[in-house]
Image (cartoon, rainbow, N blue to C red; front, top):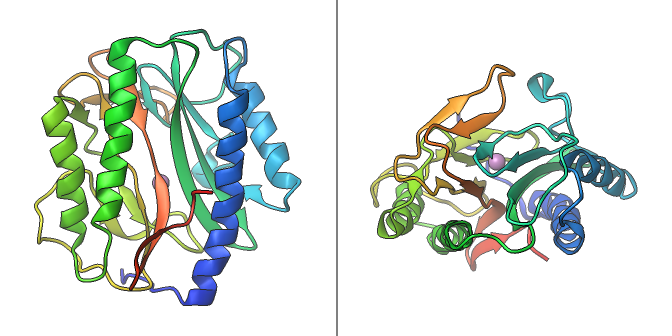
Length: 250
Ligand code: CO
């Protein structure tokens, strides 16, 4: 499949979705805390989007039953929101794909609940740093492998695990478009980044050094194989001649 380049107008449409998503995460950051359940967060997000005439693209996507993915502690990705109360010391990743007028933006964020362990704190910091290092490589003329290699370098340096099956992707009118954007790879390899490409960069790391994961029987929930913690930070961005334009930040 070919990479679908977006016009400036189309990028502005994705920005509309991304702005709503960024504001939603910003609000969440202020609300999320001990005692809250991920199901309450899920319902809150759905209402937040509805009030802005936007919708959660995940709901119904290949049968996914919720508006958000909510992944707590050793759940690394695609966790189902549930009615367990969050506790101080937990970490939780909320992953949201917003559809606004048919255009999509995708952003996941890992949150600290109350006071977290040093291990958790470090994992979240490192994963966020990998996202930033990846974004810095997203300039015209670079290749996807330059992003991948930058992300991988941070994981290697920190001794955390890369969850290799989970990767970034192109995005636009559908959630997953080419190219794949893996969190490991060699610089100067892969598709060339061109103005008008819109992609996600989404490092997903575990505090254990293998990054190995297992799927639960529900077909979605992904857990670390060694019981270690998972973290996930994701932005949607456009490649422009002025450099990376992050569409899911404030
Ligand atoms: Co994504």
